[in-house]
Image (cartoon, rainbow, N blue to C red; front, side, top):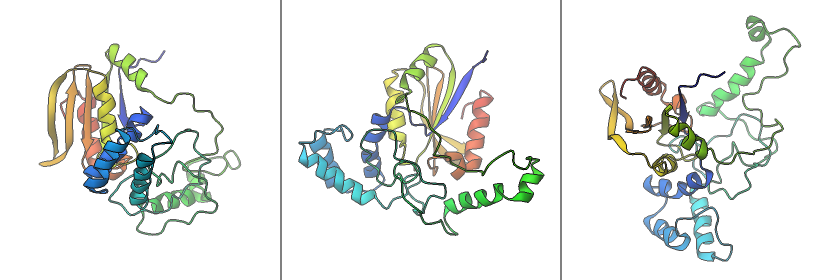
Length: 266
């Protein structure tokens, strides 16, 4: 029996519609779209950018303009260069809905023979990991029996499965009711699952705040911002973090985890 006492989530897709809708205000706040387009989107779409009425041409045109403006932005971290993804391209996403982020190259579209990342790209390290893990001497050092394992892939998008759970929000409702501790964190430069969407579904849990919004500090510098709720949930942003925040800010994320696991305030 699993003795669960708490859990941690980082930039986790939880409530897809809420998170998808948060991309436009996130992009506006980060200076990626103009005030005029943002106001037109809010007025024309009414804050709903996913389930759009096909007759609402004003909203659809504005969403198209938004997609064009952000198509060359790296969604995992908006400040990083946009580079080819080094893993095999996935099949068409099983999420049967419109995506606002046409740059979700690692999740959405099947592209034959994609270009390889180059030095200077974060994904170049992903490419190198492929060669390293499939190297004969490396496998020998790891004591992997010859022929016992096939080719290593960093991301295997060919696994057959059906997506049955489209939202995990109800699980957070249940876990909160049962009193489990949780740490929910967001890299604040991630546009794939923006922090605004995470904050929205956390707010909808409707728990009171016991430690209000404040910076958390590492080495005398602001590492992010945090807030704690009465359901024993701690929320934190990681300043400068992307979709996989520990990859971009390892020292900050380690300190955040260490403090939380030790029941210390961030």
